[in-house]
Image 1 (tube, rainbow, N blue to C red):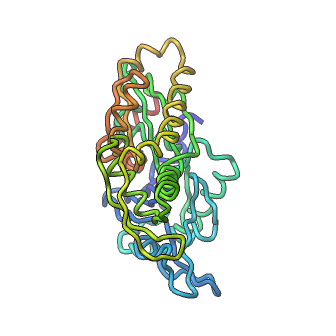
Image 2: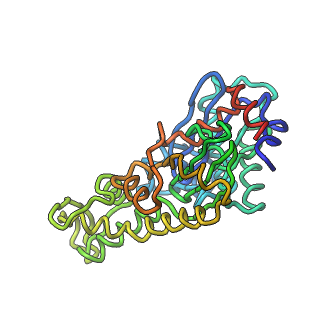
Length: 342
């Protein structure tokens, strides 16, 4: 379905945009702004399966849950892995923000990976509908990211691209003549990079670190590590010797990230190689915008620009780029008019 058809069928009257990512969930209400921006985690009672908490409160207990409780991440690699947990996440977060949601007969736009199967799309739609108690229309993430970056629906002689790297997926879209002309989803994102750093520290130092420590190393070191700069890491000695603090060269962190970064670059190259020849000049003159939680990793934008030969920049407010694009379909009448023509 073209985005113009999508707008005509679903958008008019919609008031809620939801981006349920592998790591974070963001909810935007038309006219009110972001009302929810919290981790995509719920805490349930193991026996009754009743939801105890969700969002930041549940995330704070991830990996350290009290006896009888379990922390669950409902979305993995951009798809619903636990339908009941996904429904509970949406329901719990919206109920907690219920004073903002007096929206009779409202529909919702939910962002979905462009690589999601029909089964995965139905699962996400049904979970959000059950949790939000309203009809749901799905919008592919490359479209939403392009809107959020100011690309989709623009002048006919302009174009560029978007690379949205979240916790579980990477979404790539090429934009020309006001439309996303090519898109691709890679089931790889920030979580895989965190695990690579975790594995490198364990292999090199014999030290088990937590996922949060690995994420911090990914974010603060990124691709700019050297053989001389050292960073301190604290973890558990797997031999039963308790807590241990070590130092590791930042170069090793960057090296651990390299396979995942290379996979993203190769995916972008594949999409560029598949672009329509008539639009190559339009796209070449544009900008590739980076968004998502991983987009701010040190050295990533410069590396991507060097490898693909196109100007690459960090999108404004990159963490909210996707949901911000979806909300343009709620609030920006001029964007809707331009998109109808796309």
